[in-house]
Length: 419
Image 1 (tube, rainbow, N blue to C red):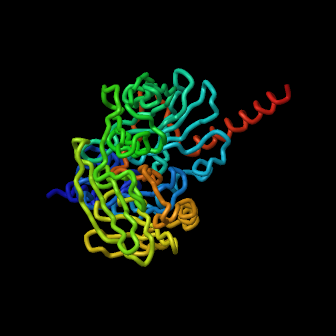
Image 2: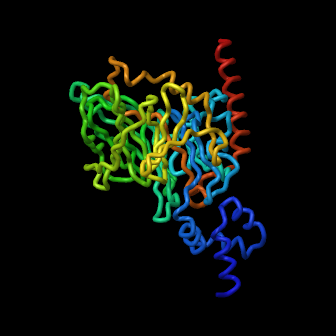
Image 3: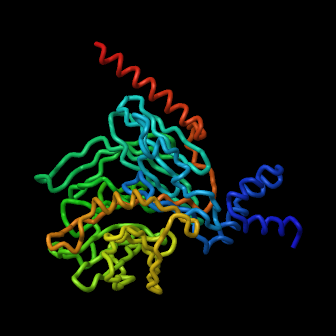
């Protein structure tokens, strides 16, 4: 093996944060690191390693995050790199809207005909300015496509123009605008759904958005925004009983699959069941059935994005965040700083305060919850896909623009109120 090949092999085993610094050593190293061969070599060397990720309550407040992985070796969790002014909506009009495959969508909610939104990677500090939609609409979300190495190849921004009820409010038609990074323009689409979608929170995977809270219990609805289809698919949930008390249901993602988790609370035995949605989007596979400890009521929140054998729960009584290894049934109480883990106890407390005790005799929940949304970094630091003729800016420029826009809008509102 030549010295150059040995050096390339050594570089590929380092974390991305270190590799990024080596790109500045010389043009030869920069060319090597940015080559498709090196990317494949890096992904192969780190295939069994996790990437950094955060878990966000309702998409804005980080409750838990992991950062010290071999893939990125970040000093903080991914959500840390989103400016606080965006996560907590300090600006009057700009706010965090969604994330997918490590990309984040920032929304301008000023309802101006010239309002922009931004898609970017907060860790790489790269942002794409998305032009205004053709007509009035609200930001719905963001979907992405990844290649065989898990690297983001394209994204789409979805804006909802209107919802028309049909069949005596049993069904509906969504009219949406879709911006594609591949062509850099907006397109219009009408999508028929046989049920009403009651809640806009969703889980996204490979360009498809899955909605859990619909007008008919026992099903999910899903749409692939990269497809030519004009209909939502209906996915039946397994082992569904609408009148079963003491049962919590939630939707999450793990290991590249959509996961459906139920926790059944009884007087003595609390049972956790986890299903995986198969590739046909029609059938489910039951992966785990375990008995939860009876010392507390454990409310499931999410699963590890890369490890299908790890689930995260919150104790309803003492408010501990707990990691459960489904293979060994070992439980670990998570604390801030434990194994490069970030915990925001105040967010945990806020979540528990809003959750009814599932062992209450009156507790009945028929919907499928999608409250905790993952922000998962990809396995490679590829640049944000840049649409034709699009403008890419850094985080400093983005915040500067938002500050200027915020001041302009406030000044305009004051002048309008003077008349």
